[in-house]
Amino acid sequence: MNTRYFLAIFTACTGLTAQAVEMPLYDTGPSQDAAFVRFVNASSGAMEVKAAGSQSGTTLQPGQPASSFYPVRGNANVKGFFKNASLQSDIALKVKPGEFATVVAMPGSAAIQQTVLRESPDDFNALKVSLALYNLDAQCAAAGLNVLGRNATLFENVANGTLHRRVMNPVSLSVQLLCKGQVRPVTLALGNLQAGQRYSIFVIPEGLGSKLLIASDAVSR
Amino acid sequence: MPALTLAGLALLVIGESHLSQANYLINPLYEDLTAQGAKVHEIGACGASAGDWLKTITVPCGAERRAGAAVIKGRDATTTPIKQLIAASKPDLVVVIIGDTMASYDSESFPRAWAWQGVTSLTQEIAATKTACVWVGPPWGNAGGKYKKNDQRVTQMSNFLATNVGPCTYVDSLKFSKPGQWSTLDGQHFTLAGYKAWSEAITRTIGELPEVKKLKKS
Image (cartoon, rainbow over the protein chains, first blue to last red):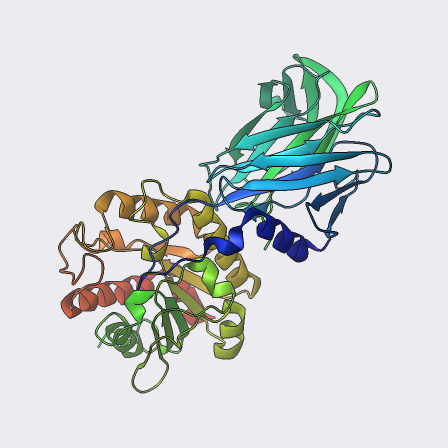
């Protein structure tokens, strides 16, 4: 994935390069916070995502469905499109300063539906793991996660189209999905979650059921 | 006679405007660190934030001191990617002195996401070289001045750094003085007496850190 080139195209579209202003003798930081956007492919096939007016972009495979977070200019127009073998869907959104937006291409045969979830985190901590649950499955009301092998709940009652985030100690664990309090036969090994890192788990529809995917919330550099 | 706390250690010190003028921190700190036995390489870049040390950018002023007198630079001053600096200096310990360039004192809100991105980018880059590091946070200034430094935001900046600079060890400069105790020229930059006091406190604290004592033994 050519993230640097992709970022350059996206930032050009959003006017980031036009931010240069006369710098005071000693700068004390930006006038507005950074903003970020990433793209997630919740469909069963490969999905291209491209910036408007460019041939450059990236392809999101079902097994690795989330891009990195790309820096964009706060409150600027972010434009692009999703494209699969037969369908295309325009992307257009604004991301507020301090916000991390996730644009999800949902499964469907007639059209590529999009869902945008946004968060403005204040839980940054180099000693802790930050873990979010994104519920993108309309058939899984009040999504939750239990820790496999322990009598512990990680998340509960996450409504469709929303997310919850929590901090926790670095640990290696596996989770099981719950929908409306009912355990589903869907598990996921999260691996060794590292201190200082941020992660998202996505609940995504798959056939008549659901699947879980985890992605690192890395920022593209 | 007490043992030198930094004997035999090579220190790479990077920072912002505080390290960029002859009568600022760069000289007292060099002298205090070397007096404790360290071999010191200091580089200051005015206005440079953490993320600016992953690339080369031009800054309005800067300074460098490695041996002999400090070299004060004007508009030809730049940052240098931290990995490049570490490869060249081969330090036992990197000391980062950054805070005032990331607090956005003149803005209503603290740019938390931007600060997180910059700080973690730099600490991860240092960690990738397996070099120990210490991050010295911002000190109290005098409220107001042309940079609009204020006690509330500097506290917020320091608290943010304390929880986000890991695996670097955080040195909290707010513990070294009381708000307004050290006189400033402009609310943010100290008179030489203030810089000498800050330098002595930084040197003493670094020398007492268990992580640094361990470096001396290894």
